[in-house]
Length: 436
Image (cartoon, rainbow, N blue to C red):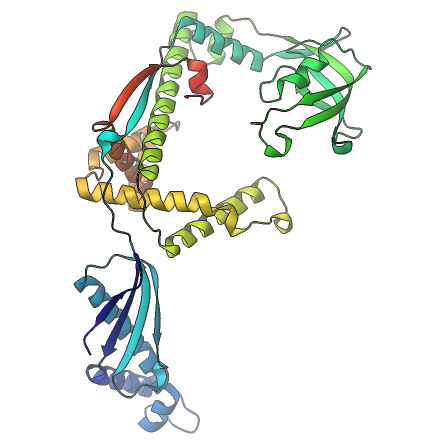
């Protein structure tokens, strides 16, 4: 019979084909003869076993293996002849191969990568952010570093912002206890932006030994979401207040930051350069995210279930391993596939779009671009030359630099065609990731 490629849906296909067995009989015979020479059978000397007995015991396995390879080969030929881009493993059905004694048919059902047109980039718009690093930004960074190196000493006065305090705490939501420090006091620095502002404000003016009850209204956008929009009732008892003593900004301070001669001017210049590099890295990352979001939102097509399922498994496995590294008991980790489905769909969709763009416009990273990315990675290590050597010792280690360099090419290609606007943005907002 002639091969038939049936279109089940936009991305589903079914193939029916016949495998003629005549051409495989010599191979089957040769395999059985090889078994005859080496296999041991009770009651027979090696090499003296009747072929009929060898056939009875091993014929089915040999035929099954050879016919399985024949199906794979035939399926591959059909895929190639029909220019099918298979996504995932096909579901192949056929009769029991160990009992085959005549030409047989198999059916393969599978998914293919979707066909789609690339969106008109002239209708897309991105924002390119620009940041100028000022002397004030450098000073603010130095102040942050100094605070990180503060020495704290116990004081008898009332607490104020930037003090370190030890406190017993209990929180409740709707009258039910949500969290409690028990008898072990918590230690934290007042004014830390990672906490909701109202909590620290309520503790200003409190002395060691004093207790205060107060309520904090959490914003609707708060993370984690369990507290978003909630009124949380707190009872806090201060056990100790410690005042910070900051280091002097002098030669020793500069030397502690790696400036060998302790030159403060040089320290400022190096901090400014570091801020410029970090700002550039974050604005480029934001630009890439804008491009990727526009690509995902600008295209619509069916996604192969096999690809999405594989990505769900990858994300779940990664999350499971991360939670274990953080100290969670594996028995307490409950992960459902639905938790990762949306992210998996987005990742698969983006991967398909990027692949089409790269192939259509020949945007694969070249050797020089890959080398530049490797050097960028290696600059983070003390021995950058050794790190570069490590990357090139195994070609697989170049996969990530190659992929990221290719993504950069896609971003440049996108930006070269879409609408653009330029906005100035303060460094604080860049570092906080608040680009909008």
